[in-house]
Image (cartoon, rainbow, N blue to C red):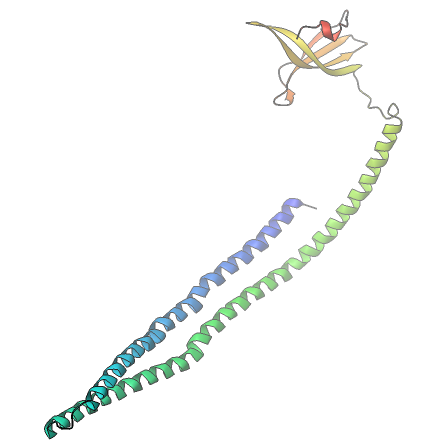
Length: 252
């Protein structure tokens, strides 16, 4: 199973799906938000203006009626006729404004049946297109998914088998460590600190050392603790004698 190939396939599917989602969201502004905003400004806005005009004319008409009712019957006939004419004129204008307001409200009620619903339908169509695109991607991905599922299961089975073998070997090595000891060309190997002279005294430097008893060769390589690796050139010497000192007697 190739992890890099799997991640590449996953990335391709997710990127393709994300691109389609972005297109759907960008398209939503054109097919949904813009038409609804236009409907709000042009139609509902016009209805609100008609309502303001209607309220203003209603107040004016009611005011002149009240004024007309308060006219004294002692007024001259000509004054009464003039007042009647004024009331008729205001009533006619109020009637026209009322009709315009009713017409606009009825128009908004009718328009919202298509100008409000149609953008929602277009948006849902885009949403369904996005879902269908995801379905097509899933269908195209199906073969690789099946192949990957089988590969994962095989890898899991191999892991379980290898794990059992390693556990068994580890148990045997614990029970009989000498039998399973790694064969090394060196008699001894490990880390030693070598005292080296510096400009301002001495310093203990860690070395990786190997020793071969037959040739009495001891090889030392400086070891950098920070980088976790060997640094510098090998230094080999022939060991003539070796004296073991107590740890407490060594100055460090």
